Length: 431
Ligand SMILES: [Zn+2]
Ligand SMILES: [Zn+2]
Picture 1 (cartoon, rainbow, N blue to C red):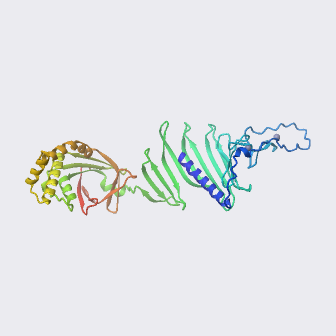
Picture 2: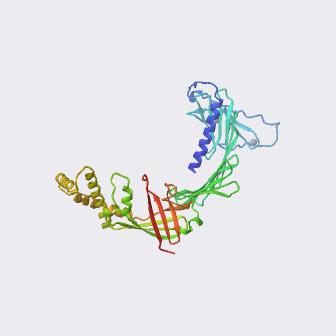
């Protein structure tokens, strides 16, 4: 509700500012008298004359605290039409002591009056230019249910100058506990936004569906989860025909992927490939065996689950070997032999290159195993021969070419910033 209200209020105030700006000719300093000093105390209610001595004994009973106001006066009106208690506003600290309108004198000489109803909702806004001409008027009409909750808010603007008249309507429906279930918002009778709230439990709510009506008559429906993550977003044209969707998940297009797949990722090949073209090239056969068993399940609802298993000892050996080889390669580039490099290193640190690499690897290996072995879930779709995956649709999507062949599929992923690709062959483990 807050969000939509903010949109409305910013629209209203923007319209008002525009109107005031248009109407304000020239640059006029405020006569900066505190509104308190302007206060004219009044007095006599100018009741109109009783009609031709009607015998009927009628006691005028206007509604208590319900005032009719303009820029100058406030008064009450009896059901019979009789005007009662008419008086000039008596303003103290920008509030009329009679009708409780808020009356603001602006620096450009314009004056605005805000009158609120018994529920505190803004029933009337009027702005006058420096000459006292009404240049903007906004009427707020409210409908409340038995519980006193606002079911409908309608703001109609009657702006001066060329600003068109507009009406903004809110409609609310409530849950049994009084919390808002749905909000609908429209401008000049045309729907603009709809919000539906989910209440997983008392005191907790979130927008689970947002409908945006676009100017061209089409609309967009967005489903959200409690964390404001977009679950889906679908566009419909003016005839209600789906024109685009996000994510671009299409169950039929993904049917070759449904099920659980397995791939053994050969880390020595991957590391070697990733170092290709850098200053330190490392042939795969110089690295120890290290394989990550990856299992991925593509579900029919457009989500996937991925699990990975890496052996701690293999990862440790790989990390050590990478460090050692990289130091040796750097030394060789300096014209040293491995033996010379070791001797120099030992003289400096009291350890061999390998010993230091092992000490460092031991510190970080468990954390790495844990990170690699952690399950990950996300969303996916295929389009034009590409498989795209992301943690959720608010996150960046990664994609690769994908070639399907019944019980295997090959995924060819570009390696970021390197002019190379990694190829993974997945084998189906379930039918
Ligand atoms: Zn009366
Ligand atoms: Zn007043």
